[in-house]
Length: 239
Image (cartoon, rainbow, N blue to C red):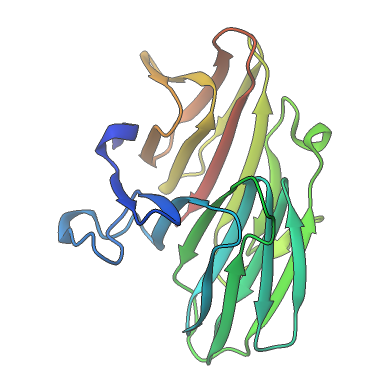
């Protein structure tokens, strides 16, 4: 199964202080036919205006991954964690039995863009936990850099799910090869720039906000295209 979801097919939520593009049913976007992709429950591309934020609110039994694309995001939670997350930072929050958190833009000018991903954990009722790490651009340049894993990959943040998340800054003309494991799901998302995705004899051209949902066992070849701008990519491997 290969399905390309264009940027225009996402659900747009614009409240003025926050602009969000929802890839799956979320909040005011109710679509039972587009509720999830395997254990991937939410995939929200958010832009938060200066001095605005998602104020303290609760979660439980979710694995929440946040990737800061541009700007600075301030995190605070009921476990006592505080952090200013710069572009290239990733945080993982295991909500478990319950956690409260806020995500705000602390700057007077300039918005913050961040991707938020929700995964269903393998087990409910876990102890809540939080962690974060910064990955400089050179670490992800022309490679798929693993940043989150439920399989204990070195250098990654841990989630309680058999899933992995990768990021890449792919220069024009450079190519990545990703052999999809047997009968797995792959969600490929273009944050910015342009890329070509080759799967067998099929070729798909992807631009900002486009995504490919792939299930099965395929050899994926991803090539940076466009006029010199890197293709910023996020790839999520799921059962």
